[in-house]
Image 1: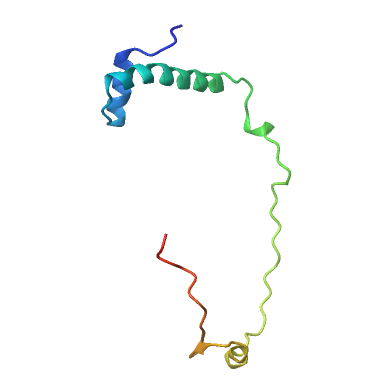
Image 2: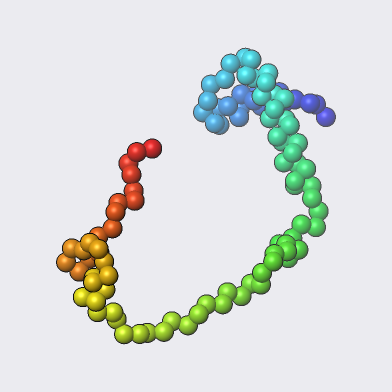
Length: 100
């Protein structure tokens, strides 16, 4: 088995990816793409792989608490504990910034 792809194979991959590559890059990618394909082939060659053998530390069941309806809080009582409010809304400082 060769240790690199043909020039035509690399150019075909470049065309599929819609990129232009130089002659130096073609030589570089002949070797690198071949290594990637070999690694993928190793993964594909694993025999007996099945989702049933995956192990996790929890069971499949998700246990949720029951929803319990209760009486709604009085908005006036809630707003008494808020330092700033506007109408029936509690004002909070902005936490989103446009700066990156």
